[in-house]
Length: 63
Image 1 (cartoon, rainbow, N blue to C red):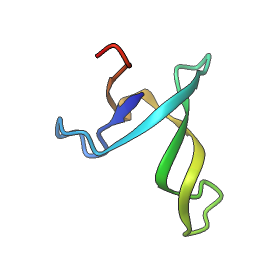
Image 2 (tube, rainbow, N blue to C red):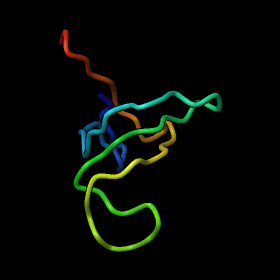
Image 3 (cartoon, helix red, strand yellow):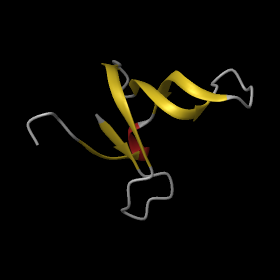
Image 4 (cartoon, rainbow, N blue to C red):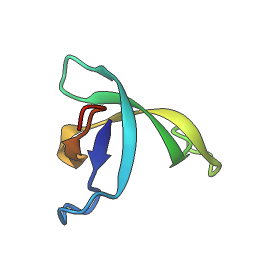
């Protein structure tokens, strides 16, 4: 799991599931309650590619 901080205030704004770490440092995620990356306005569950500067932290099942 990855926790995002869009406005860099130290508070988590969104979470996603990491599908893959990409060679350039970005992460490919699966996220719900998010906009369609193709630009349509419908919210849903989509695959996204995110830069690390938006990442507040990570979580795992072991806590």
